[in-house]
Image 1 (cartoon, rainbow, N blue to C red):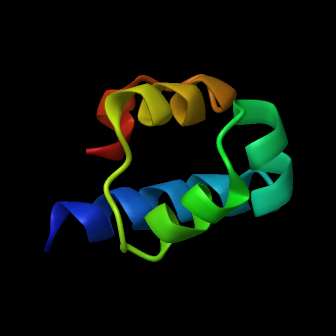
Image 2: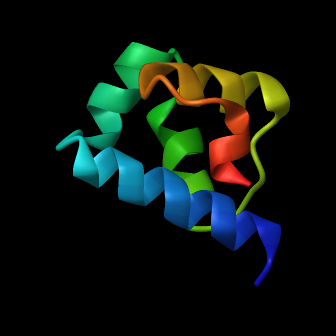
Image 3: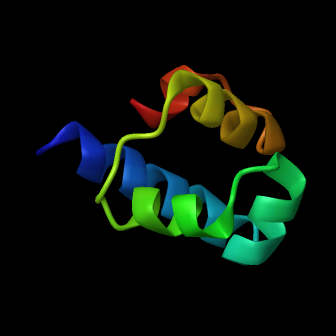
Length: 66
């Protein structure tokens, strides 16, 4: 499986487990909802900086996503 898809699936999974909308995650992480949506759909690989912001919301290390 491609890395883009793995990161996207993990992000969507943890977001839904935390009962969080893309908009709520965007607000908390300071990452645009458009970017989050693109990552979740496996269209793009987030930069390390973006991954760190997203991971911090869920109190995870970036290793969780890869």
